[in-house]
Structure formats: structure tokens, C-alpha cells
Image (cartoon, rainbow, N blue to C red; front, side, top):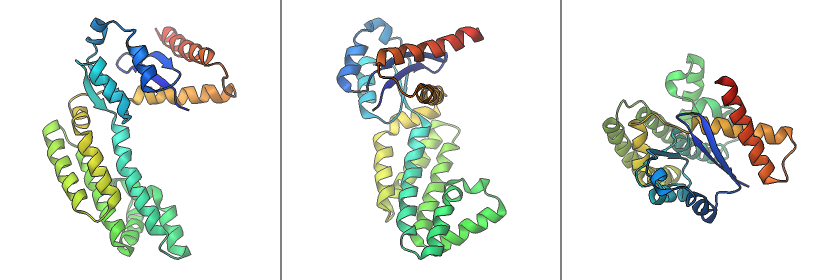
Length: 238
């Protein structure tokens, strides 16, 4: 079950916790905000949950939409992992275990590998054409992240999408379609520095809170405990 957390990543404030992320509930909540207040929101950062971005376009018309970098990067990693798992099933025990145990090395950026790690990766790439193509596309995508401006990122992303579409890898073809759909919100991240890093950090702390309490039966108590935890910390720092 998903709850929804609303934060201000610029000031590091948890605004509220909602019992779920159903569209009807979100609409009812956002309607409580005065229109003039909503028009002052400059940026709307979210994951790739479509109802969030749809509601942003309706209720925060002046806000620039941003898709958190972690969420669109992991689309590429997930696709690569699906390909790796399919390939490792084709081999005998030794190579299958080698692919499985090399998961972390294969997803790391090539430039960060040590010589012995690079040698192991190159051995795996030599074994299969599909994993070699998938690895190349994964590395090319990382180059987009190194772009210094939106124009460079847009050019590199267009090239990546065309390469993925021309590949024989369905998982990357699906990724290309996803990037095309979210392209404006993704490219906006190269113009503005905001991410969901603060929000994801809050989520991790909330999970610890829930685990330490062995769960909460009453949502309102859970919500108040979360808001108290973050507001108390902020007031203590100030």
C-alpha cells in the first residue's frame, strides 16, 4: 500500500502525508489549497507516476515539471537487468553464476571499474552479443547524465533513443518510448537543480519509524508522528 508524501525540497520541509495516492484523494486534497497559492509553486518534482504529472498540469499550471533523476535512470538499469537475467538463463551453471554474481560490476559505469573488474566485465561481454549491445547502450545513456546543459542532453538523448529503437533489444525499445513520453520533464532536470533526494530520504526514515513501531493501525496517528518527527528535527536545528 502506498501513502503519498508532499515535501518542499528547497527548504527541507515535510508538508503533509496522505493516506494513499489515488487520483480522487489527491484532487480533494489539492482543492483545499487556494488557487493563488498554487499559482506561486514554481517547480513540481515527482517520480514517473502519471497521475502526479497529470494533476500538476491542472493544479500547478505555473510550475515547471521535473522528473527525479533517480527514477528515469533506474528505467535504464531495470531494462539492462531484465536482459542480463534472460541471458544468464541460457548458460550452464558456471557462466550462469558468473553473470549473476557480476550484477554490480555490469551496472557500474565503465570508467569506475578497476582493471581486474574491467577484465571480468569484458569476459562476460565477449560471451554474448545481446549483453554486449545492452552494455554499450547503458554506457551511452550515462553520457547523457554528464551533459552540462539542456541542449547537449537533448541531442545525446535523441541519439540514444534512435539507437535503442534500432537495436534488437525489446527492453531498450520500451525504454526509448518511456524517455520520449517524459522527455520535457527529464530535460528540465538539466536546467534546474531540484531532485527528490530529500523526499526519498524522508521515505527511508519513515520506513524505519514504521518498522520500529511494528506498524501503525491508525493512519492519522501515523501521519502526526511523521510530521512531529521531521518538524521536531528542523526546530532543533534552528
